[in-house]
Length: 238
Image (cartoon, rainbow, N blue to C red; front, side, top):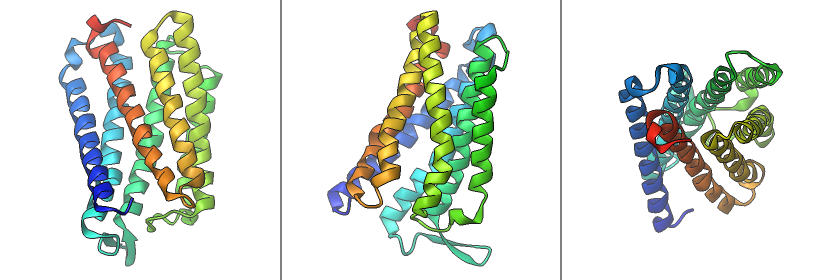
């Protein structure tokens, strides 16, 4: 995506995405009092999850916008005497917030199941906890705009495992209970990983595959709107 038109299109999309997700979070927070009392614990987990998504992507996606405007060579900061790409630092922030995003969704599922943590809950939390540890290792080279391929696979594997497991659980439980919103959130997770996996595996060799980040990002927006309609706009139904 090196042409001026492509860069403009990417930046417009990124700014529109950040604006949309922050507006969604603001609406969730503002209308929290309108959520049914029994559903507030679960709704609060979704609010936390999407606040984390918006916060983390403000650094990651925001760094992409800045880098596109000033160039990769100028988009750097000195951190502890080391020159670091703001894009790499943005990826560091969003890597942690996205991990906790899924931890919050796992906790929402626990609440929905009657506040009883099952084996799947502990597996998901343990796998995501492992990812937090992996991301703290020096081999991640967060100061680089392009992460080491091998370490990128290692740190993304636990996220993919936890996310896919959670998606399957959401879909199965939503079908069992006739909850279309719960199913929809699960299918949005499936879509996000379907688009993100080729990027992780092949984008370094085939840059055009990076375009799949657009539908991957849209999948999270869809997830947020489904949650909003389910808990903050109850007239929309399940």
